[in-house]
Image 1 (cartoon, rainbow, N blue to C red):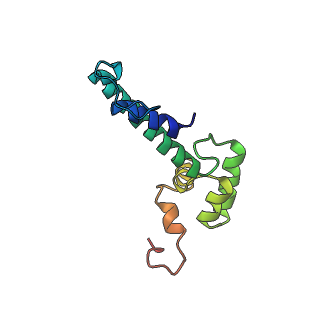
Image 2 (image 1 turned 90 degrees about the vertical axis):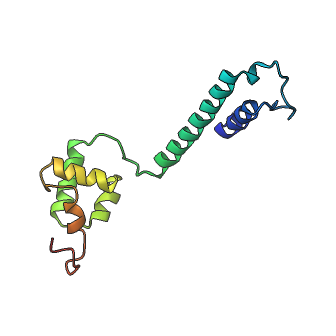
Length: 130
């Protein structure tokens, strides 16, 4: 069963409807108990949150959240020191811009995460002199 199918069933029950027949549930049904109704709405919200989290995770680069290896640190420093564009560095490492910037701070190449954004601008950009 998919989360979407489960959500439809939970919504129907929370609204007092039999998910199989579409008819109203009997008044004495357990599903008409206020605590049960609240629990069903909480479950529906949890499914929504899980779905949003899964969508977000699918949109992140492949290495997002993974630990950094010594080799990857060395490669990052080599690319950064060679003056490679920041977008190229993030793409090669499969990391978010924030993760790359934070790692460069940790490795002592920059003082602040915003330093990479200044450096990644074209040399004749008004903000490049900062």
